[in-house]
Amino acid sequence: MLAGRLLDGTGVQPQADVAIRIAGGRIESIESADASPPDHASHMVDLRKWWVMPGLIDAHMHLWGLTPGEVVPADFESRLASAQQQATALLHAGFATVRDLGSPITPWIRDSARDNPPTAPRVLAAHVGLTGARGPWLIPQPSWWEARVVRGAASAGEAVRRLHDEGVDVVKIGASTGPGAEGFGDIPTLTVREIRAVCDAAHGLGLPVAAHAIGSEAVRRCVVGGVDTIEHGYGLSNDVCELVAASDAWIVPTLRTRAVRASPEARATAREQMDTLRRGEAAGIRYAAGTDSVGDAFTLHGPGNALEVELMGRVLSPDAALAAGTREAARMLGVDGETGTLAVGKCADLIAVPEDPRKDLSVLQRVAFVMRSGQLVRSDVSAGNG
Ligand SMILES: [Zn+2]
Image 1 (tube, rainbow, N blue to C red):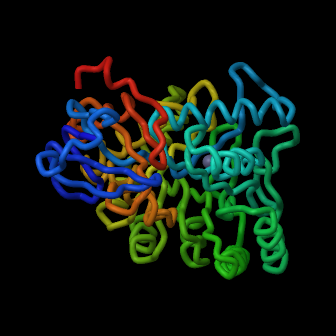
Image 2: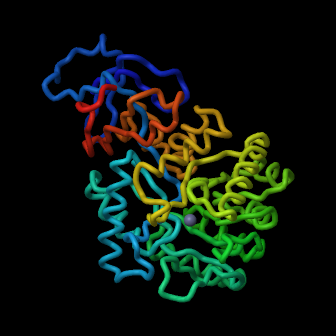
């Protein structure tokens, strides 16, 4: 493959005119095109007019298999078919890896993608979440969201072992109140003891813990309890920002889902999210990009998921925002040995965009070429002018 500009995602300056050799789904060599004899010219992918970079990561989303206009969930088979289409749309938009933080459908998508990389991103799945008995998480069925109640530390350990047996990649907990009439609440739903019991059990089984947590007290409990990733994580005092920054925890700010809505509540939440991101960045918190998209009319799965990186770039530097959607997200998810940067030995998960994404992060919504694990997913590069 010939790349006009290579932004390998490691943070170094872009390289011009690069030859990338791929074998067995992995990157075999990256060298100057001048130094690389054109021995495979007949089947060489020509991206000389394009910017080549690592495949994107959405570190917080949900494949619920929604279809437009649906108000109650369809049967499982219909949802599975719809979720499969959404997963394919994400891959075509350049997402090589996604983490689903709550959907009973997603383990099926994950398992079928393992054998057939061009049909879906690499998927890390939480299956169903755990929450405390308090607050409106437990929406009457039928619901897109499913959660199990944890009451006390013993119950937490048991719930984690069951999820482990069901094959989850990550344990999701709802640590502050769930969706109500005016959005999510900031009332804690689990005690530090319960959170610690979840984390101890999960870590003992090699699983990370992701916590939905909004507001200072819920996030403080998560950090003290040993949570690995804090989802949403806004409405934080400066003291709690410092606490997160000093811990091993990451925050996934999930900006897209509020930014695309016009209601006064959504606008107020979006402002609060940006304010916390600004103060958290100053405190030194580590961030990864995740949209909380669910595939509804506001948050269709596809090119729009890349809006998250652009929104993060309104506070973070362009380089830091890009890293949040690639290298840093891969580190957070523990898949940085496979993806997140383009380097010899890693999976050939790569995309091409028409311009320097550092100058305009919106080009991430105009991905024209996608390769996952060395397999061609999509190529519209002949039509573009690069
Ligand atoms: Zn979510």
